[in-house]
Length: 293
Image (tube, rainbow, N blue to C red):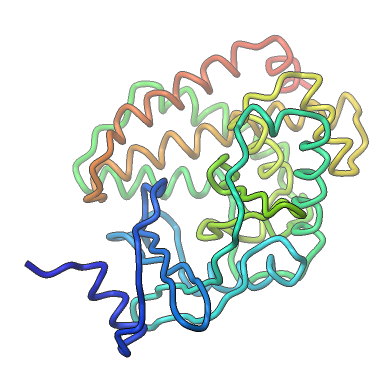
């Protein structure tokens, strides 16, 4: 029986001098650690129909290169066409414990890393959370999915938030700041997995990190300070609104993945969890006040 990962490694390095192992954690792609005489690399093999998720592999490459240029992303070594596979240098380090990234010293590092990316070179892609949600909706329905009952109310709320943020200055953003995408190399906090990157609302990144790491109100203030953003009623309100948008995007990502992905993962439950979390966010008094500002 053929080994798809072995075939992929041989496609990139046909000399037979590679040892490899699959890296865990991904639910969109296959990531392979490849050890060779000239170094250690990560080969990122794109999953099925990832273009439906709004992923452009050329943008991913450009975003990774831009992040590397500011000392945050991994070094890009090669880009394999036509498959759109990305080869980066392996970063020696560890994924921080999720709870540790809530600590003030770690939030300082997170804020500095995200600010460096946002202040870095522009990238060719574009990311608008509501547009992404609507594209996911359309793609899922065309493929036979039934939209969750929570979609309509969430969509109406999201349209109000989008109107509030219209005209914001776009910055290069990661847009997927899950804990697994951070690596501590002992000196710097690095960020990997730039496939959803694009020029977007910087508050989506901040809120995406905040909601995925379950930051409380004080910790969200610390994140804003670490990012060098004024901590005001307006900035706090914006962060609250975009926490909702982050979970709405994530929930609908789960819906569309449920009809396109071949990976063994319960995407329906994933979507339900994020719809439930955005419901809880929407019930918070601070969120309701922010929406009415």
